[in-house]
Image (cartoon, rainbow, N blue to C red; front, side, top):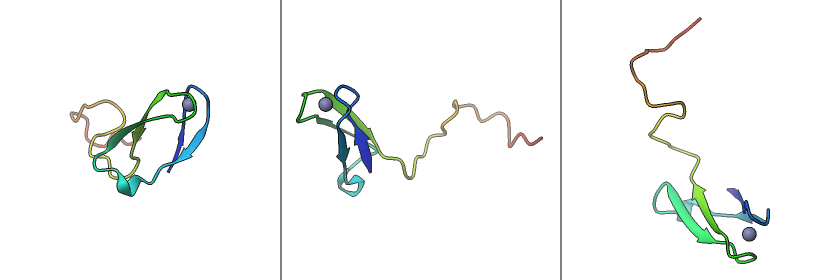
Length: 59
Ligand SMILES: [Zn+2]
């Protein structure tokens, strides 16, 4: 999984399988900026808002 430091734009390849939770945080070795990593697969929470009132709006 590719992670980009938003401070110095350095790219890191993080093994998401070594992450215990959905999120992990590490410090950029280059600039010391804390980088928040979020695992992309198997997200239990929906992306767009948290409303569950509308069921499958289809056009
Ligand atoms: Zn950095």
